[in-house]
Image (cartoon, rainbow, N blue to C red; front, side, top):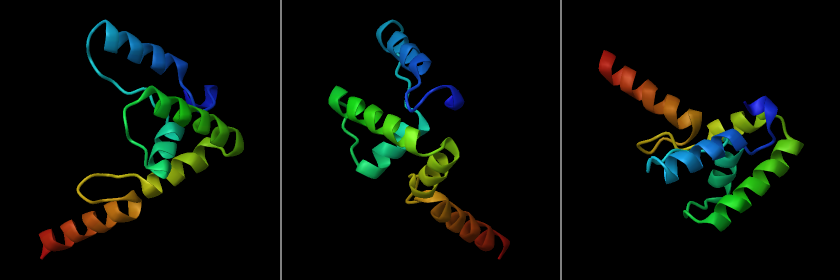
Length: 103
């Protein structure tokens, strides 16, 4: 639905509120723009203020940049597990894995 919203997915937010309060299950509702903002700002606390700031910044960068550019930026800096940051870290880890596996 990224082509139909500007940084905030209201349907995902409603789903998250329902699951959290009714079913007592925790899900995510962040868009890629919000995740990008979270990684750039390095703010991970679970507070309403952080979420609102993140949403405001996500709206601002979505107006300025297209979804492809935001997604590419996020993939280049995102934590991908086990010390891998961004696609370069992921590919480096996978290359080493396959090289060691073949040898």
